[in-house]
Image (cartoon, rainbow, N blue to C red; front, side):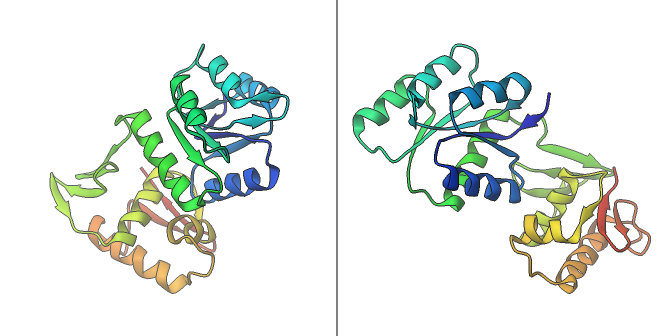
Length: 224
């Protein structure tokens, strides 16, 4: 079954599509369903680790959808709604919602909340990955060499973490610009400097790397 990080169930097309695109751009694999039927169809053939659920869904309500979902799943459900009354918030939380987020929302803040909930829900099994004498800890955001911390600058860590999380596949430069730096105008020079610094810290021979491989004309691949 295809696996997603997040499912958005909301009948506001423009907002939902922009949220979906933004999440996907930053590595949170997201799908959008406009109503209860599309939500049910999605869950028949896919899995997700979190649901963003609107209250107003045309002929039905997010409250009814939440109650139905709670009969079969305990995945986090975050309500997103323009309704702000205390009664709505209390009802959402009492029927199984994990949080209540008011519209309009900031995409950056919403993404941060979603990532935090996903990390808490998934636990720690995949939060440590080792290669050679090195271990990267995604919880503490540290790189360790034989148990001792290797000092990395913020962007060096973000780049290494993304390479490792997407190991054994070719990652284009454009993808790295968008997913690591968050824009599309970062230059090759900046990327090359960061790659060189990482190789100097984790490769026995930075000129003949074992882990961070250059895919000429395309990008890089972290081989593990």
